[in-house]
Length: 138
Image 1: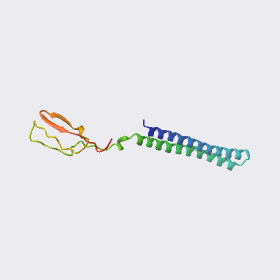
Image 2: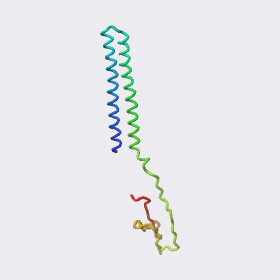
Image 3: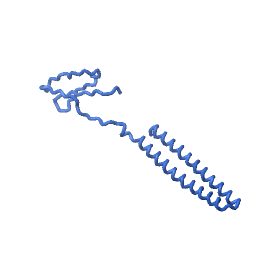
Image 4: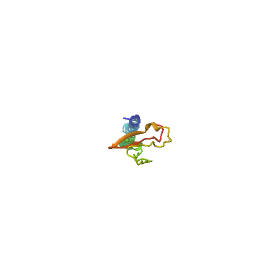
């Protein structure tokens, strides 16, 4: 697992913790209003407190769902490495053809990375010369 995916997981944990604290505070405020309403015989205040407590529960669940889905999406994006790789084609940019099967000519290369030239014989007795030159310094 990558470090950025772990970081996203930790951020998701912090979000869930903040949501739990916020919804607990809302529920506690509703509980306080309910207590004041019941002890002072104010039924409307008690009902408002109960409504606030239910609101805190519902909103906490909604916020948690959004936070979990967002964290899962971010982790999935971080673990998807297909966006970071580029398509590489393995077709030659230049081709030299010689008239002889036995005599090999040297390819005129003006690149300092000419050490990567290799000779292979994949077609029986016909020698083939190929090379790879990176377009980056990596």
